[in-house]
Figure 1 (cartoon, rainbow, N blue to C red):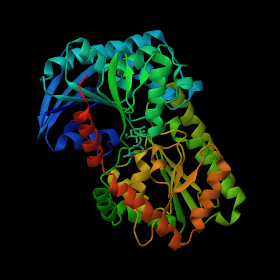
Figure 2: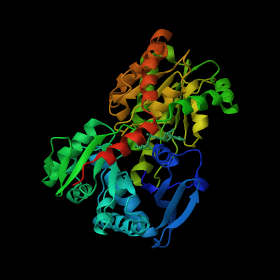
Figure 3: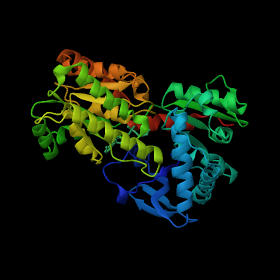
Figure 4: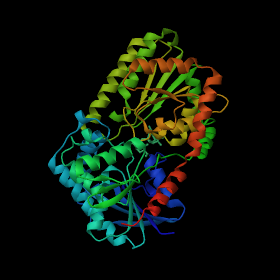
Length: 459
Ligand code: ADQ
């Protein structure tokens, strides 16, 4: 089999692993674990200047090629264009979009620099797989340097329809650049269709009868590859974690109360203010639940250098204070709000302990927390998943209590339904969901993408 070369914004060599890797890193490691390969991207370090050559290290079958980012490159490419323009737009948040031409130029410049650094490391028969919104133009930049490799792109976030995409200044350049790939993969069919429509409506492209598109004169296959997790490994982790010290302490601290649990990066796409408001609504509309339930939200600070994230943090602190101030009793704190990160092992135990898993993003590519929550449950006494209809995961996990995350009353009602649901219904819903989660593992996702990339007809 040809070597697989993966490029993603951030590379985490074993020395930098923290036990808190996100879904993308776990998936990339899985893709490279079996037959080995190269993983290319930013080291996570900000330096004075971006170096011209990557630093190479090896561990097992994986070669890591990383480079630091210069201060200005980091500010413009990462904080600026990727996280202040693209991220809000891809999550349909036009009101939060900030655009600076200098940031866009920096984004293109870093993609060019990445291409120039990666190109000499490529062998002619390598399969190149590029990940996520930071690197849309990387394939086109590699092609410009003469790379003729088979190249695929996978977007972990949602992809919006043309009317939303058109708001982004310079969107045409971005869509045009995807024409360099042989395969473009998305989390859901809706995202794939939005991409096809954008190519046609905004870049003079053409729909092809096999579901692909003609973009910038090239044929691009388009596919749907919903990302999954290694469910069995996660279940084992949750079983082991149930006996851990942290879990015992959590259990003791609950003194018999039911736990409602959420865990997300502190990001405005995750719908956290609405979730806090919904909990307030639960306590006001269903007073029987007061003193019987505890809501714990873990949300470690993310992208703290972007202003919208700092504002969100202040908003949540104020909401948490208001809820606890309004409802707390001398022996009951209704809401526990933590900005600390936890290892996946500890989280797995917390998922298993909770009666309700709250996953209510306003928009999300997939949302792996939803799948992890299902995998962590005890079959004889499973908890209830409350899931946003706008998470990619809702397509597969339709046996969850599906809610519109903008409707705080609906979330509050779903919480009350979950807290009072019979054991028979909880089991039936969980069985339907665990089957789907087990049936679509992360290794299945890797295989499906690489197989589709391999099968793309030439030209
Ligand atoms: P994310 O936006 O990071 O990923 P998600 O899919 O939920 O979102 O993955 C988060 C991962 O980080 C999970 O594995 C979770 O356990 C872990 N995590 C979350 N909060 C944590 C915390 N407080 N401490 C430690 N770990 C935590 C992007 C897209 C998603 C898409 C994934 C994968 O935005 O839509 O599902 O990529 O494609």
